[in-house]
Image 1: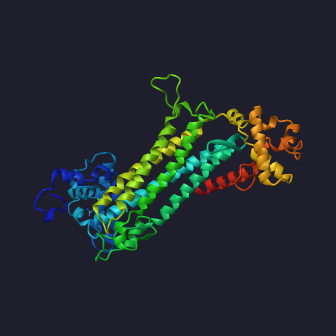
Image 2: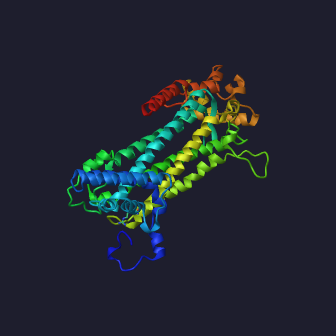
Image 3: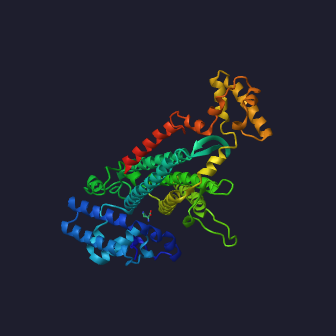
Length: 459
Ligand code: ARG
């Protein structure tokens, strides 16, 4: 018979039973469920709702179950529907009455909200660690390549010279914000929901603050209805996973482009690339492509839960059972993606010569040449036009600006003098960009110092 079978006259339809059951996937929550139940039993004993002896029995029983589950000794039953009722039934089988008493002053509604919240908090901790590791790698690559020239692009067209370290530090900033996003989310969700019971609280004299302390939350949820209905913490988790995924996918896209023959800026390590079943010469960036592709499921998981939540009346509805699989999948996906990306970043070979070579064509120093004229007193719009004409001339003559003779320059404007060559040297163009956050050596030094301080603050 079902744990809730009292008021029923028929066995549940088999297909309905299977459709209803969540044990296939929510067994992932067994540790959190047991932890929550042990805390609940302690609270019941503290409030004299059960005896100390009974509490000890319950705790021992639950700990034994946990040990057995962790070595795959337990076969969960679909008839018991979900992880909560499976564990409760196992406990009753093992210790008798205590198993039946445990559910006093709680409901599966607050139980499941607690379990998922604890699960997500733990995932955030793990993901923060992985992010901090990849930020460390990016920091090291940036430091090493703070003087490695490469073209910076807009519209995928060569725009201005930058350094590879500077380009990499842009990703550091994205991951730093993701890290902070996780801390914010953890802060907002730091309210313990257990004790809300089905929806309205309980008439037992319970102690929810004690529970919060046992389970390391700073406080308790303030409204029981909200406690069992809210899943915004899960939506936020999925949102943050999506954002991290999108950052990783942009980085992946660049690694894919840069490792193509057309760019040849980097080479992905053999151990992290794959071959073709037909073309012997191929070395494909599959890992980067997969990380890019994983955004599909990350965004899908977010949209799935957002859609489940939309228009759902208070309080608990079974729709909420759909909250778990997206969370499990996104967390698994992001952890693997960050780890693989970290390995790729650690092992990729940087082709400095090719990057430098690419700076020579594309008139990356055109803005600097215009600024040169500005410094000589020509209004910027006129400078823009003069340099535009020079670029057109160079394209026709098939040369770059560094190769133009002074008299050629002077045919466009009498303002040009010998110092133009110094002004448009790629190295100098980069070195001068020292506005806060710029690619210049001095500005980069500050970025690196701040990044280092951030890494120290989180490690
Ligand atoms: N398996 C359920 C879920 O995941 C647990 C809560 C069930 N509560 C209920 N009143 N049926 O949401």
